[in-house]
Image 1 (cartoon, rainbow, N blue to C red):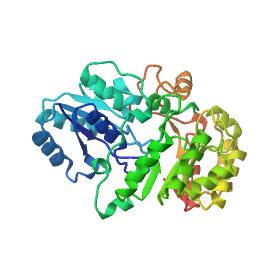
Image 2 (cartoon, helix red, strand yellow):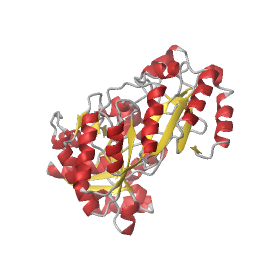
Image 3 (cartoon, rainbow, N blue to C red):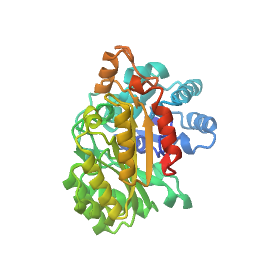
Length: 402
């Protein structure tokens, strides 16, 4: 059976992503005895001609569609990213009779709504490496360790040539997050328990990437430093392997210490994302953050002293936010001396989150809204003031990014 996997919408918040998820699914399909081909429309030049050529030449029996992003999470000028994906589905219908099966992170958050909007035949919420082969085989999916899932060969999903050394390649070593931030959709995508690939399996794969010419990585693990013991072991093995790779990571500003920071820097970490979201204790409590501003400041200082770039993030306007807490957060962001700072006004509301329940209780959204089209929470008292205040703040600080 021939399966064509399409990475359908490659627009991202910070950078165009390489299709790691779709490539992992393709590798799992191959292992299960299917013949899988991956088409990444981001690098196809003319998407329609590349898609038509794949459909007519490959003649797939099944089409898989990876839906990564639903929108750009920008309250001021939101972009809904699914219309081009819907056009891709229509294009597939025009040139193939194969059933279309959607999956991916975005689909997992809104499975019923995305399936209905796109008009696909079936959908897979959760891990496609196990669920896609199970669906094709007509059997129920079975729980699996991450090490049971194969990792894709570089040539399958990473463009070759001289530019390969400049690409920032995504790497995932862990899935799941138990932290339950009030606005976050991660548990809908990956679940709550933290599951890990063995450090040995990760190092083998990173060495394989290095041999293929990859030099720059981005660990897309939600929290690189959780659990700390795993992060330390991984860094030590990267140092021992002499990989000499430049990499970024996302860290949670708690459960971290100077030893781990030094290990990360020695292993090649050059930049970290610090998503502390607020500098106000009451707002952090409303967001269900486990850290406090003092821990953020300490973490930022340790990375600064280690020579690691710090990219910071503020989410302003959520439940409990006031003008005073906004000013407190903006002053706090200045105090940690970030190399870059992204300030967002309003919080994207995702289904089945505490934020969605709060918004519904306050009458800001309907209790039955599917929330597929972007809806945002902004404290009503701040609606006329906060966007202008943030614009003024940004104008005076060249290191802020939109």
